[in-house]
Length: 389
Image 1: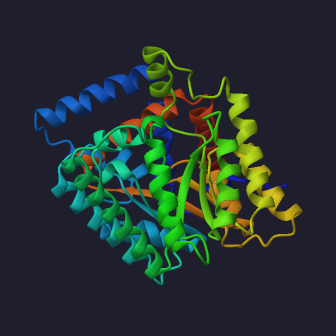
Image 2: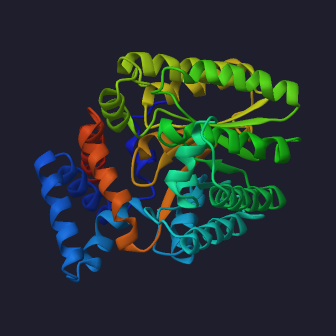
């Protein structure tokens, strides 16, 4: 059994100054009222064009982001790689709507793949389809019964072209590409797009990965059906397995529109399905490949034991763990120290553009039961250990 209690290993890459910054940040995001005020103050400051970039960059941005550009992430990539942890460069700019912006984002994602070519420190690339496509067109296509106008057909062909350019670059560069999951009312479109890329580029190994959000009660069955389809089609199915990120929005929409919520009835059901999916994937690793994106210690422990019990190599490239930069270092570094393959999501982008991502991180740390207190307890433990040295 791997221990996630070893704070010396968990924080060996952090200076005392880094630990103190993380301590105060988690202290602040542990307070819902402070987070609420912080979001208001940050948005107000940007609207008023106040010079707050420096403060943001030295605090929350430094904790959770690699830099404003790919090149600014170089130090973070090296620091992680020094401890056997890979980097997934995540261009975290959101809310764009023009074709010009979609093209710019597509080229930026391709640039992250180019950075990863022949570079073992960058094992994956990632993108959101809504970063390169208009939400409305994805939503309309989600229902196959909807008829598209000629302009909409042309628009969607451009979306397919952008996705294909990214996946083709991943294939040519041998850098697997994660396609993120999003809201249920556009997810069928994303699933179909992703599978069409898998058929094209996953003949020999998993290059294109779909993302399964296990807070949905239908995803375990979806996984089994997708595996059978991949076997028949003779392609590999890459899976990034997460719990999910749109739970409140999904429940609210289901209630408003009067349909059954796609969300699991409770956390236990979600956890059970997540671990059942891990078992299924490891049992079918001849067809599947996995990146387990989780901050859950029990699931991380469960998968590490599965890998060992099945007699698989800890450094089997079909089996990865992943966490977000600035969070759950006790999981990432202790897994890596035990020779498992681990990568960190490293968001980057201009500070103002990345703020929606950062504010979501603050919200999530506030709302996930025990997450912030666990981070704080481990940081405090390590600070005490260093004082006693």
